Length: 122
Image (cartoon, rainbow, N blue to C red; front, side, top):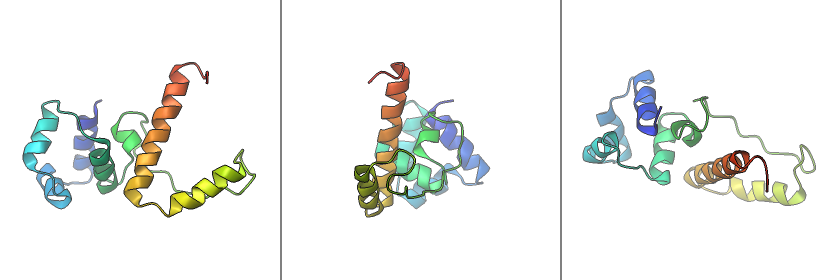
């Protein structure tokens, strides 16, 4: 299932019309029609739509079949393989806007997928 199909599926599940979403997110409906025709969505737009539809960019991109966003939990320093640098990064992460957080999540998912596709090699 492609990104556009997943968006349509979530709209249906939430009983939201594409027109309503476009109005709420200030997206020209012609842009939505372009996506239907195969035009590519930007990561920023995918992130906005994911938040609006209470899902994740990873789900809309087809990187996971779980549409439910995971709850954020700060790692404890030294726990679960997190270094002090990871812990400090997470503190900075909390200061980012929700849109920038989602962009980082999408980037991390792409890096993880790339590593897995390469057989786990660095």
